[in-house]
Amino acid sequence: MTVSWSAYRQARRRSRQAWMLLALAAVSTVAGLFWFFTAGQFAVAEPAVAGPAEAPVFDPAWMKPVVPVNRIPEGHALDALEGLAVKGRAGKDNYDREAFGQAWLDVDRNGCDTRNDILRRDLADVIFAKDSSCSVAAGRFHEPYTARFVDFRRGSESSRAVQIDHVVALADAWQKGAQRLTPGQRQSLANDPLNLVAADGPANQQKGAGDAATWLPKNKSIRCHYVARQISVKAAYSLWVTEAEKDAMKRVLGSCRGQQTITAD
Image 1 (tube, rainbow, N blue to C red):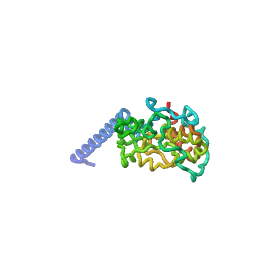
Image 2 (image 1 turned 90 degrees about the vertical axis):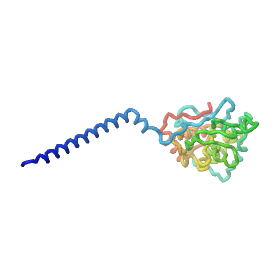
Image 3 (image 1 turned 120 degrees about the horizontal axis):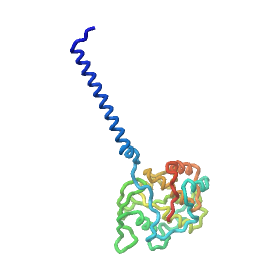
Image 4 (image 1 turned 45 degrees about the vertical axis):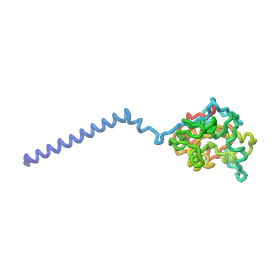
């Protein structure tokens, strides 16, 4: 069979194009592998939500410790979780916030009420109200539950944007052992800095009295600390967990088995 010179040249041109495409693909592959094994793998590994990995607990410069019922066990939070009793919820028909004492008492007797103590602890660039060394008028912070940067300004409306969350909600505590505590012990639980975090108002409202089985912070980077803190509070005040709550806590801590319990030390 006779092949024309024109057909031969077209075949050679197509062959050269095919080889050029293969060479480009090889170069792209090598470049991609180089990027992945240098900077790329670290970029992929970054968490989807950036934010604080833990929340503050205690500042000995101006705060005094609140004495809990029990000493918090040191070590892995998973081990402390295994030490908590597992029971169903008690009734809450008789729950009353006043059973935990007046809100925001100066339990540690440092001269400032608990709400302002927590705002001062958690906020940066704190500005006090005029002629006060306690009343926090303004500040900003990296909010732990949403990972957003939030500005706080004291006011009837603006103060709602930043609320003080009980990490173990008081209504949840009431259903899981707090009814058996003395009034003084419940007062300590409600004002213990270990159990308090300045938080996004809407997120706090969404949480309500939920436990780990029904609510976790949107910011995944804080979840290990948050769950460990709940376990620490429950161990400190002889509170129990439900089976569903324990399972949820174990799932969270499964991604951070080295997570320690949280103390004020």
